[in-house]
Length: 273
View 1 (cartoon, helix red, strand yellow):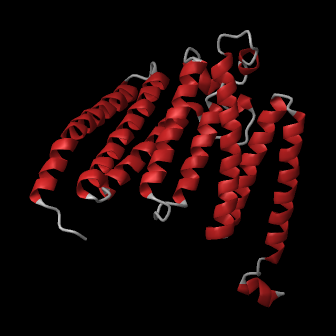
View 2 (cartoon, rainbow, N blue to C red; view 1 turned 120 degrees about the vertical axis):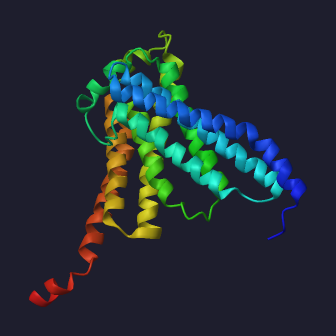
């Protein structure tokens, strides 16, 4: 590794100083909001939405620090990237605390959670999930294809997909997909994104099962995302696409059944047999 000159180090510190200040201010704001939620539950959901935005902003500052490091020092800033990863995770967690982390569940199981943010418009909901997705993608790209976090991102992407789905109010979404609705465009784009994210999450869990873990629960989780997608398509009476997902589900479930049958018995069970 090339030695970093004093000049380059000084230049780097000068360029990232503003990000350090913004990060410190953001962390102080996080503490303030969490304290407010702890001592006054009123408006907690909107305070958590503010926390989601705050964590995504922090992740952008950490990514910018890494960008400066690569430009000036020709090195990745692993500490900044790790902090960025933590910030993105926290943004998803804060959103889950509002809308739940349920994957394949009827709307009635989390409907109550959305009532406090009823005034949060479809435009703002779509913008938020787009911003979160961008943060995740930029972070994955910055960490690189061979990152030690490669397979851990499967869980982050899955939790993001579920939260993005649960942020939509399924009681009003049909009305908002009427072309005459003022919320038509963001609602349609949000629904398209959800369908894409649910399918990607399913495929990513299947990929991790096949290429990394061989854990049955990874395959089962992938199947649950396909089931969630089919549930959404059924609500929108998209019979053709729902049928395609059903066929994929049947194929995956049959494979999972066959894989389980091929699993070797535990040693004690084999002896007892």
